[in-house]
Length: 319
Image (tube, rainbow, N blue to C red; front, side, top):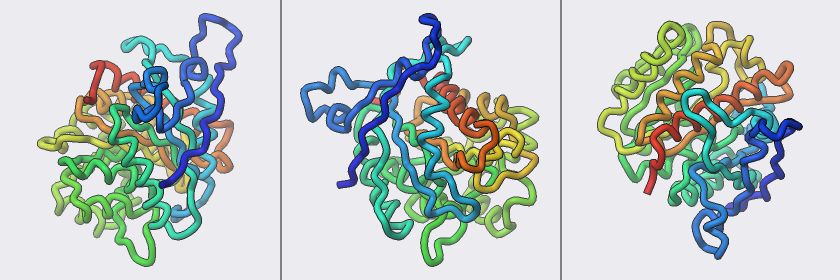
């Protein structure tokens, strides 16, 4: 059984007692408390749980995403909990980081999948802090016991063929081959995807919403993506931070111009999160060593905040 490292201590850096920040409300949590296998489960119940995945062994381009979970947590700790339309964020706990084994990407996917299965079996929404995009496959695969759709906010489609080993470019091909029912990519960039991969998605009735379309109408882009989820029972949502323009997120494996603004990303996420079928969320490809002034980590942390605000808009989602 794959182990989780103890979660870090959280604290909000503001000295103003009225400044409630994520650092003030995130509580440490164990898998035993989450699953109800010890007497403290009542103290550890939560609508959503953070899980760090410090790994970048599957990256095709520049590495550094293994340091992403720590950077995202640090940035999130200072974010205030209040959304003007949604009010404060609800209960949230941190399970810590997955212990990543040595070996192939496939072996790491198997280990991560063990943790993901256990979390998906609870009533909590898993919020995976990446780490690279290769772990999307094990994070979402446990939901394939239902009819599953994924909304991939990304500059790329990530449906490359698995050759010698899985990579950060293969997760949705792996999910399709395992029975994925629906797929939508929001933020896909022109001249960043091969024709063969665009055709692969379209042959499977997947939806591709370009960065141009999402930038012109982010809420419309979210609706477009959700329309592709018709008939599925569960929706998994992934944010690869390279969906953002390189000026907003320089600290990713493949930063390029022409991406979404942070405001557009947040609008898409809040709308998608409002769908009652949402069953998992992740932010991947934050590489602090490649970042400038913490921009990418700040954008990723606020992506988590906006998503959780949208997710909480309708109250209880599971169980």
